[in-house]
Image (cartoon, rainbow, N blue to C red):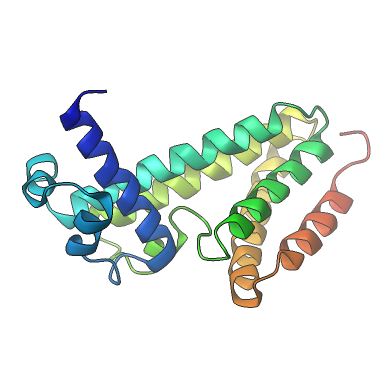
Length: 190
């Protein structure tokens, strides 16, 4: 990786981590530059649109990294129940590893983003991609498409809500409880 590409990547990675942990408004450009070790001028060189442009790139990268980790987790399981359990277990491990500071890659920013901003569009797109991913997993596991659409929304909402409670409690127990409740609702032949 050449130096400019590495510098851009450090800015994106650092910003993604900070936005995930602190949110958009609590994260300043100076903090991103300092923690990334990038020269200050490089921020505006790579992101002439400033903080929002950087945030969009960072959230997209964080979401892609999260999805890649989840896919790797699911690679070793076969049944729908195992995949649902693996999803919850991956999320729980991500929370625990971060000391309960980093939940969903875009949730914290979603709460702050104006509904008319590019940032909001990135967040909305992430949630729809994740819902469709879960829907596909459910259909592949034998659940009728119409039911999978609704169940994917329930599952995504349950994960997001449980992550919030986990962060507040500093415990993965809420995710484990929701995981067990949702897997009990799956058809037995799936």
